[in-house]
Amino acid sequence: MKKILIVGFISLLVLACTSAKKEGNMIVNGQIKGLKKGTLYLQKIKDTTLVSVDSITLLGNDLFTLTDNVESPELYYLTFDGNTTDKYLMFFGEPGTITINDEIDKFGINPKISGSKNQELLDKYNRIATRYNDQNLELIKESFLAQQLNNEDSIAAVEKKSNSLLRRRVLYATNFAVSNADFEVAPYIALSQLGNANIKLLDTINNSLSEKVKTSLYGKKLANYIANIKKNETND
Image (cartoon, rainbow, N blue to C red; front, side, top):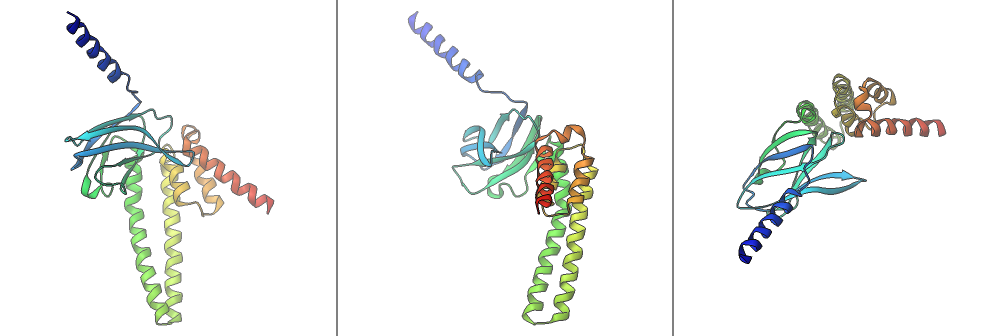
């Protein structure tokens, strides 16, 4: 009888510990093929520091479920130990269920992510932005060759093309942010891609944001960033 009571008590204790795991308004689940051993961490930036908000130890099973309470959509990271420590997967977290499928050998390079509208928009933005990056790399090669040959005409031509490419990149980022002003990805793009842009362009994006986005994490950061620029310009 005592053994039965002890077993029952232990079972209740296990259940209590299991149910004590914090449930958030964002559930991140999926599969990392090949990750058979190690701990997978769900992380985000807090006060400039990367902190873990949830984790799961995987042993012979590459399926995972992680959670967090998202007050405002923001970037999250999946990182792990065990197989490697120098890789990470970045995604835009928001309330709801987000499914992430990837593989250990190419972790974070081309993950399949669904369930996050902000991530969907960020992927759309990055597909075009990558083309600009590729063009910029080609111009860097052209510039290097022109300088080696000391060809002033070629150097001037490459510089002209580089300035044109920069204007198009900035215009694309601005238009994309304004066109998606109802989503938190808009101020994020302004902050991450247009930090050195003309203050008028940043103002244009900021003024186009919906009230919901203005009060979001990145919306507030963008407003503060613009305010600091204007303050410094006034002091100068």
